[in-house]
Image 1: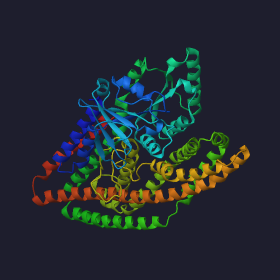
Image 2: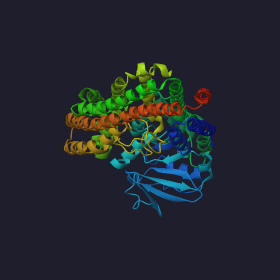
Image 3: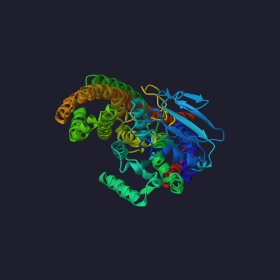
Image 4: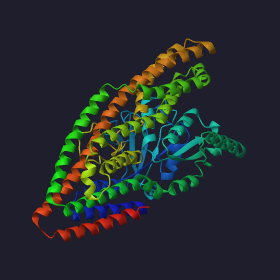
Length: 558
């Protein structure tokens, strides 16, 4: 077990024990323990078709598990897990799993990705890392595009492979590297199949790839590798800083759980030091706040029904138009080649890259505005909670929920289930989505645009382009379709953002409501102790000791 994993489980077990000893809810700590224990660090191995991904991974595992030299349209992502017993599972778009007797083109066509459980010592040594053999970035079919985009979102770290015989980094790879960069994820780059070229050629291509990365403000050493000498690949995977990756995922979450536990202890201690009437007044105020929060939720849902999001979406569609226009020469050349799939892919990549780049700011604003609206409803609690020694309560709650929503960006690749116990949210959360965010994956709009909108639009585009013979005529035909592309994207984004705002409202409401319920519960439990006329001073002393321990635990998380 990696050190940070053990450390975090120990911390959460301590928080769980303290919560139970203090007669407080330990649900979040228990869920977090399960989350930490069952975490897998997803690391996609990506590149264009025939970049040597499957061959290198087979060498790494020490057995030929993955098919090589298959057509790009038949490839599916394949997650690689260690297991003494070897078997394969197909996973469809709804997360349903089917065990497969064998893995072939025919019996995997209905699945989004495959899980391969392999008895490999190298896979065992790198746990909890899970490597993923990805379809090529240049895979033309929409369902594979969906898979590639979803793994951009799920991946913690990326290994990029580009073959030396390509001579440079492909357009598809550049687009996806930019997506990875926009998602603030890290990567390593390998130049593969170097045994197929002489050393001078290899060094020339290496410099070319290095220059293209530098153009994207990515300063990484490009490593060279071939299937006969993969020691560097083995070493790099085994020496990935899993401690740092694990810390990045969970440190902030555990800090928040500590802070919430600290606040609950302070409230309970203060309630035990208060009189029954003061506590009862606060409980009644909390009950009113819950009604106000429910009314605010209904009000926000009604308001958003008439919202058109045109200002937000115009920033995306305008940039898509600008990028398409700036790449018009390249699009014309692709159209002249007669390969409509490549043209479709390029327009798709350009459009999706813009959505990924811009959508986070829009989603952040949606979260912030909704969070602020709910926070205003609980501001009346600030004066009531002065005596509970927890600071400005409305700001505390707003800050905690804001942090939970930020943590989702990191935790969604490893999440197993919802964190909040209320079940009124519209989304069923799975491994691919987050437990804390008010708005689920920011990549959803990008994926939906690619899968639902652009293939239809580009099929019209390419039908017109087939009839064009001259460059100017072809350029005019392509440019003439840009407004149509932008219109279809605009319409789809409006639909998606309306749905996501509904989810945001419901999820943030759930978080506020649960936070208020927890505070109500702590004060009610203190009331019960006061009504028993027991040894209140001993109870307070025990809680104060627990409070000190929680503060020490928090300080230990660097």
